[in-house]
Each structure stands twice: as C-alpha cells, then as structure tokens.
Image 1 (spheres, rainbow, N blue to C red):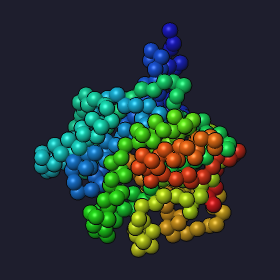
Image 2: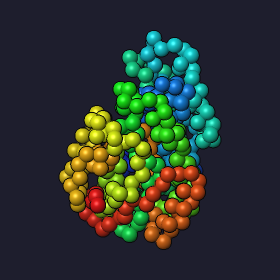
Image 3: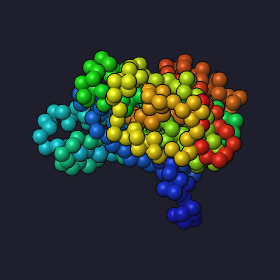
Image 4: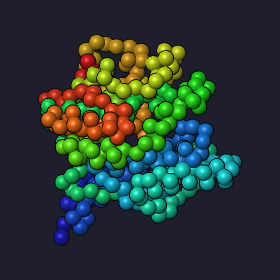
Amino acid sequence: MAGQEERVLVGPAAADDAGAYLLDGRALVATIDFITPVCDEPRRFGRVAAANSLSDVYAMGARPLFALNICCFPEQVPAEVLAEVLAGAAATLGEAGAALLGGHSVADPELKFGLAVVGEAAPDRLLTLDRALPGDVLLLTKPLGTGVLINAFKFDRIDAGGLEPALVEMERLNDVAARLALEHGGHAATDITGFGLAGHAFNLARASAVGVTLRLADLPVHEGFAALVNRGVSTGCTEANRRHVADFLVDRRDRRGAASEILFDPQTSGGLLLAAPAAGADALLAALLATGHRAAAVGEVLPGPARVEVV
C-alpha cells in the first residue's frame, strides 16, 4: 500500500492551482478560496465567489465533486443578504454538478465568502503547471481587466452597466474550457486570478523550466479598462504583482500605462491560461470561440530559462 507521501501527486512545493491526492486510482483535487464582494447584488456575488473557488479545480483538469462554504459575515448584515449569497453559490455549484456538504461561518468586520472544493480526475489527465513544452501555444479563455473594473465600480467611477460584461464573465465556469483543453491535447494550465496574467504566466514558466512570450496586442481585454487606467484607476495589488515578476520580465517595448497595467491587474474568477501543442491550438481556439468564450491565442512557450517576454 502506498504511503502518504507517495499518494501526494501535487503538494504545496509545486505551488500549483490545487493539491492532488491519489485514492483508489483517482486523483482527488482539493482547493480553497474566498473573496470580498465584487458587486452590489448578493446572489451574484455568491455566484462569482463560487465560480472563483471552483476555478482551481478546473485549472487542474478535474471535475468538482463537493464543496464546503466559507462564510465571514459582519453581524450587522441582514440575514436575507447572507441567504442570497449562499443561494447564489448553491446555484453555481448545481451548475457545476457538485454537492454542497455544509460549511463554517465566523463573525468578521468585512464580508468574505468562498468555498473549499474537492474534485477528481484521472491521474494521467491532470493539467499542471509543470507540463508546458517549448513550441506550445498559449491560449487565454476570458478577457482581462476585472481588478480595475471592480475597483472602479466600488468607487463610483462606473455604474452597474459598466461592470455588467465583466460580471457575466466572472460568473462563467471554467469547466467547458478545461474539458476542451483536454480534448485538444492541452497539457498545462493555470487560472488567472490574484497575481495577474504576468504572475501566473511566470508561475507556469518557472514550474516547467521554460520561457513564455505574451503578445500584448492579442490579449482580450474588457471594454473600458484602458480609459479607467488613464483616469488613474488601479488596484492595491497591481504594483506588488509587477514587483513579483520584475526580475523575470523582458518587455521588448517598455510600455507604460494601460498597455502595461493589464499584465499585472489582479483577476477575480479569471480565465484559464492553457498550453497546447501547436498542431491542436487552432482547433482548440475554434472550439472555445464556438462555445461562447472570448478566447484568444496570446503567446508561445519558449526554451528556458524561466521568464516572461512581452512583445
């Protein structure tokens, strides 16, 4: 019988999107995430928080089995609001085909909500950070820019209508994107969340001991992002994300402003960054577009050393 260390397929040292544990020939994939509100509608916040938490399971190529709620609720928030948050999350779990087993709540001055999620996959079908190969094409499955748009909404720089397209994408599950990646030969993936595109691309590059190139002109970006950045809207994480990759970033054109900011904007419930063989990349992109994803081929995988080149 395998010991505990032998059962750990993906552990904390891998710094991957989720952990993976071998049980009865299957890989159990486990993750946890929670966020602060992204909009004024409690039910939709619950949906986005659930999609965000489920995303790490999809980024590993797994399907979710069950989840537990993580609730940090201020005592002064009405019970009806909290019920709506939970209802939104339950609806998204139902869409994902995952069971809700319960959860835990604590009183907290700031509202936070998310899920601990367990999923499963075939061990030889996991999408992990360390499997990207030189020559692979990089595809991104959702537009970027949610960090700036959420902050702009919170500080009344845009209205609910301005946030709506991004909110719809944040509610979208990454299940179909992950399935299509596996069907078309994708072998490495990560979801784009708090570290921004450059940070998560570098995590993939470092784990696979490769370089990656990102084409700024090809990045899908939410409408209004550039205008808001030019008006001074940013996030509290953007500069930290920039510093995180500064020593490994090669910017061929030394851009500033919105063109640079999009690389470091922290995402909520972002898309998947997929590494797929060049021979299947066009078919994968076509399948993503056909299923409603605002996807794009955004770069390539290069021989090492680990770095992110921006062209």
